[in-house]
Length: 346
Image 1 (tube, rainbow, N blue to C red):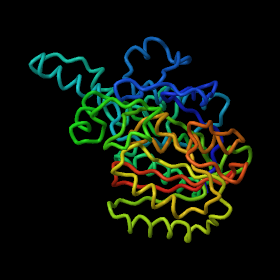
Image 2: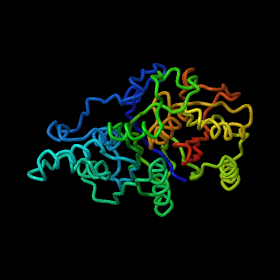
Image 3: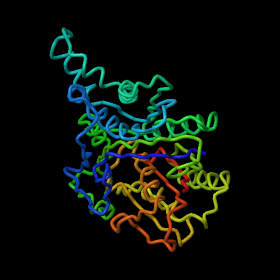
């Protein structure tokens, strides 16, 4: 098991510092862009050179490192890293005919730039790794952290998931049919009944370890699956429940990764039908949009609910019979191919 001691999130909603999920910030042109804070603690000279993904990751991580024990390592998940800076650097190669190039864009474009920048600013020389596995990037980082917690429960790690909206990735995914062709506001996302979803971005960071004392929540179990077969998904979920001794009757709430793409509704429906009728269902991707590491936000949300906070009406798909949120199941589906299950308790 992995215990979460602190959590921080920068997203398109009011989730940083003063959390207020009751106000739904609107999307623009089928995108939900992160609300960036003032980034206190980052020197202006460094901030000016940071790409957006690096800013989001560092900005979400630094508040967790104040008055915290020395990190044993930094474990992040991202599908694209600083893709926008990567494209800028490639364009420079053409513009300057492979002459004198500005190195900043190249340095900020690598997927491990976020973790390395956090390590540099915090003086951490421990384990440092970035998992890059598309829609399972954060889940692989989470699995890595869980194995470290088992190996030495006394050590503390920074765990996180970060992705940005880049024009390059947005255009490619749009041509692939991942996003809606017509403008769809995020407050009407789940009623659109059309193919595609809306794009999102954000960063969620966690201080994690193997000791329960003063923890916000506990990651009890994690499982992933790559498949387009509904039957295989159903069987995988049943195996997840059985192998981890999860009693569905004791689950308080189910956090669904439903994203408004009608082509993926069948996967979410399969998991929802496996739930007892008294379990409440909460959705969140109208807050964040869709991006590869959005599951990191779902874990942040699970921690938020586990601390006694309630989900506002616009997030609730079905009201549950239970008033507490101490036992939570999370399901995420990315592009109808990559699936993950998480069981979080408090």
